[in-house]
Image (tube, rainbow, N blue to C red; front, side):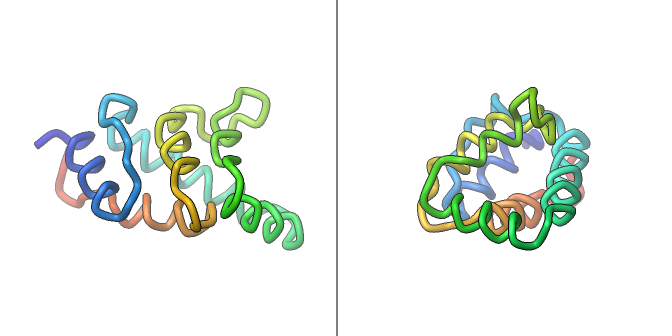
Length: 106
């Protein structure tokens, strides 16, 4: 099974529905998620908490792929999927996405 298909399947098992065709190759996913974690945890703690709380109720995750912010533009499809999930914060979704990366694929 191709990385994109297995990754999308693992994400679906965790409640995140994403089109495998919208996902980049494995190394890009890994590097982009690392960039997201770096960006997120470099935020001022109050800003980080506010953004995290905001993503529970509002579709804000897609901004990480916006050219102006340019945190992880390759993950636009994944962030759009994050925005469809209710009740989970960005930090939770990033951890789920990171944990869902299959080992030994690619």
